[in-house]
Length: 560
Image (tube, rainbow, N blue to C red):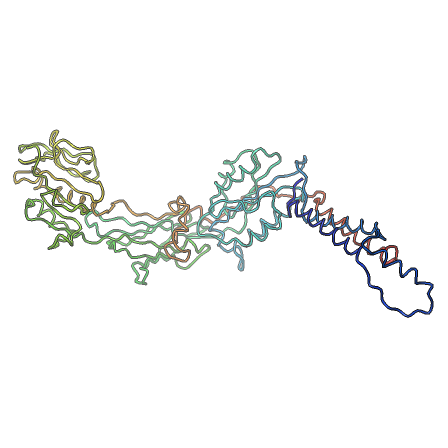
């Protein structure tokens, strides 16, 4: 036997304390009152009553004491809610999976949200079970967790359900189903009831060993959503990029949506009306947008069924011009290539530079990014063909028929260097990414006056890529999608809940509020289950009957 209410030691304590109180009440000495009488024939009986209640005399009414002590013991057991171990043949073990994702914020009726309807539906499903059935509730919003365990009272479920609020992320139904399945592992006569507002027949195929029944809340509704936003750098202008927002629509008829892109300060960058077909998508973009670190706000107007996917924010990357200082002894070919770089700014002093260009490795500060021209190394003659290595700094650059000049090389490649350009078995360019600062090493033969490489347009592009890499720039587009946010379980807690950067785009999982009529009739209706009252209810009923009988006997004078 187990106790689902107060623990067993508390049950024993309540019972013993009740018995002790009854003992005190039965043994309590009564102070006689002074009463004038006309006869002494009743004095013997009056003296017998207080004597019977002294501490050294037996109870005058022991059966009354036993009867009341039994009633108190039954009440204490009822508080403990005793339950017998083992499952009967018709006992049902059920887990309700409540998919409380962001779509629950959509209205179900004119004055109620889907979340309100879903909470009522979960509680109604819990009330359909018999008292002897076992119930657990799993909620996914979006991190699956057990809201009500099997050994907890169902009364707690209502309080916990109505404390839930629609989250900003979709429900992880697949993980919630796995959690429900783990709770039912090895249990017979088990059932999983999934309560959601969006059908996903694939979910039912992901669980085995238990019946999966779907229950839907809310009506089918049209909804447009911001699916994703991304910022892609322009290849010829790394300080600028293209910002694009992808809009999706799920509904029963075509509609138009106004898309507004503005800066956090209110300045509008785009205000466009797009026509959308059911199940279709459209992309709107702002071109040549500087990477200035500002926050952009994307909105859909007017708001529709689900508001969480009608607005999202995006923080642009921050890219400023790179301060470069060039030493006087640097070859002229390198100086010209750096000056022609559109996002490199020459500074008069080395202290204010982010990247320095020198011919002496020892003179470069250890914490400074640098382009170093190596003049000491194995010699190589001119007209040696140059071959690029497999690295993104030289990927796509045409070095065909290019040759080096006469000068030094980097020698055999070291293990700590990333090879970039070769002339036979000699290394001409390499990248050193060891901390604290990355460096680009260029052989003097690559920059010699008789070198063919410096006269080609690929050489400034190669240097521009190296400068961007040393400054920590990445050419990959920055994309914000709901999938990227869901894969990071700590994402909702990285910033305050009211901060704009926590906004996220929608997706089909979140934003598709349409549902066919067959979805609601696909599963049979679940009937209400009945069984004998629970043990604690029976004990409470017996105790109440006992109190009624005791009061009736006192009224009739059978018990003094």
